[in-house]
Length: 246
Image (cartoon, rainbow, N blue to C red; front, side, top):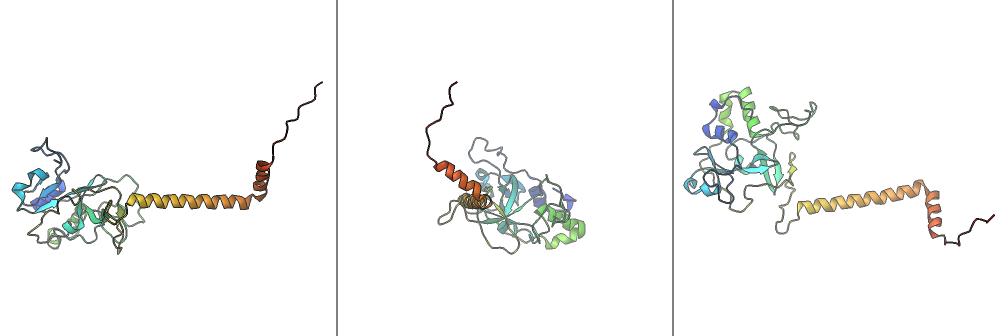
């Protein structure tokens, strides 16, 4: 998290950006599905599904997981923040954005399009890789006054329907480029095609074409060798000739 000063942020945003989600709930240690993947904006605390009854009337935000990092569905995040210029990703037919910036393991490409805060490579024309990077950029360039246009007035924020995705995202996700339409299908959905099936089919077709082109090119480059090999293969076996005895 790269926030310059937490003192100027609302308490719920401070807790949201600093919270560590998907740990086991301390209250429901022995229960199944006890990961803390729900954030209560009114109580500024993360909870598990078993903790929901006392928070039913509160604003609740579902936290999801993508490539080992916390993400929000873009539809949910837009009810709280101005998400313009934050790069989105598509997974399970839903657009998501990262909550915090991610550590970089590659050398920064100075010539490419990078995050304005942490220099992570981005698709054009995005400017930020996460919500925290955009907040930090606003505080650095515009100060506290710039946050007034960043937040949205959200009085009601319910959880999605139970069983829709259980707060988890599959790794079969793709970048969402600028101006594109929804391209991925939900895995296992009715009438949809599984992403892995499409990938395997495409890979098999590419390998088949490469082998076909390689065989034809070899025949074109070495026609004489191919002809000799064919003659040797089709030649009948003869009786072995023995060396003369002396």
